[in-house]
Image 1 (spheres, rainbow, N blue to C red):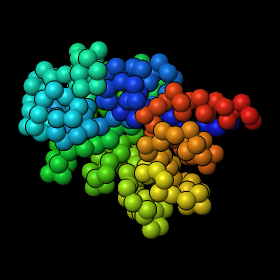
Image 2 (image 1 turned 180 degrees about the horizontal axis):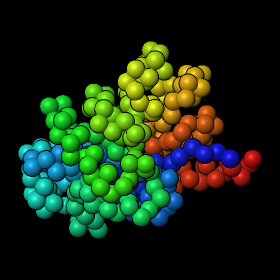
Image 3 (image 1 turned 180 degrees about the vertical axis):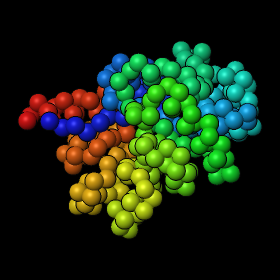
Length: 247
């Protein structure tokens, strides 16, 4: 049976506004194994869920996320840009998402974002929340900033973690072990099958992003990737079911 986990990238973001509660709820109802979302800090150092450093693309606000207090951020619409039906959707705080997820059997892939000067604040504000809501066993911490991941692991080595890469690294097995993480999240399609197999053989959990075509979804599942990040979890779940029906 194929066990590749399906992660809804920023929620079910093909059909709902990304990184909103409605997108996460839709992914849960579809049966996704997990959700992926982005966390950065507000001006008053509250972890909030939004991808970009600025508000312009996914809200009706403007300027940098980090230049606004959480109260100011919560006053914005995070859904009207997508469709007027989602005007009431707001920027979630990390705590809101953790409360929502507490009684749901889903894995949360939290991508750490923000300025490199805020690494200490990111670690000090996010990790206590994961412990408070007893979700440390259902969380994967990932980031393009591999230094912040290392900092987090020094405080909470029990957390599952991964580096995110946008290039085809030389000897990634060695690098992943040096950083001290267990996961390698790579931009599709920057791995050959033999390179993927070598990583898997080394005990590293590989997860490609962002995979939306049926052909690539099927290919990565056949490679036995640990997980796949997709904007279309419904399609990914159908592909996995078809593969399992053939066995």
